[in-house]
Amino acid sequence: MIFIEKPIWILSDGYLIFETFSGFLEEIQDFLVTVSEPVIRTTLIHEYILTPYALYAAVTSGIDAKEIIYILETLSKNHLPKIALKMISLCTSLYRKLHLILYKSIYYIYSPENNFLKIVLGDKILKKYKF
Image (cartoon, rainbow, N blue to C red; front, side, top):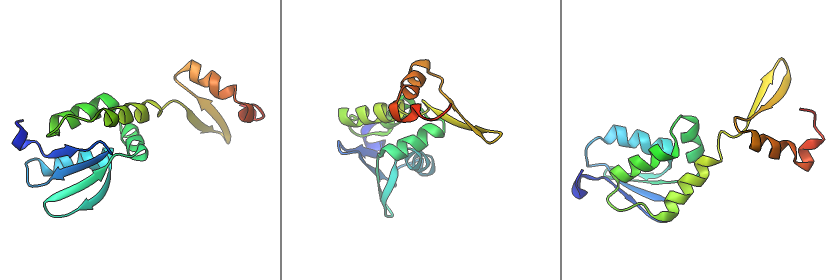
């Protein structure tokens, strides 16, 4: 895509400005709603903001940080601000680390990362509970 055709401006404070008069409106809008929260949606311009909760929702939908960054870089008129890259990487890396599973009325803790599980189980507050 050339600069004129790219529909998104990404600001350093996490705001995304989407020009809806460009092509692929529905696909881009679906992606933005998945990874960010809508602020204002007028006829020609939509404004979204990246938030930790929205990024959490994106990760639970199966989109990882690399994919989010790649798509935003592809659609953005400007370079992604470093702070936005750090936020996406940090927020998405914290999710899917610990799973609380209810099985036959008993809760179990599962983590695909053994080191993370050791940290959680070593917590003073959680030690008093039986896992």
